[in-house]
Length: 135
Image (tube, rainbow, N blue to C red; front, side):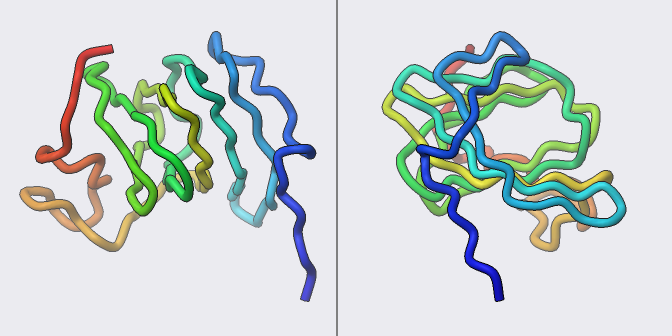
């Protein structure tokens, strides 16, 4: 067993995509292009709009924030919720109050739990019932 320290003091700033107040700690990499990060978004922090280089799960573990997909509509996320982005999908994420999230990236992601109205194997994104506002 190996213990991994991913405390904020080890986080490095995210400088791409016009990001502000965002940092991450790399948690691991895997065979077949798999990556895991812990992301810290300060109040008002965001990772700007860009295409997903991998299938991506963005799991909020503390605080609250938002994620926006190809349509640019910001959808609220809180601890215990996740957003899923397909490889190539334009997206952004951020927080008005601060948020910690785990981001898991794999070449092509096949989530196990389809959202209502979506077929299994398609990225479930964020439930349509979540409150939203335009970015």
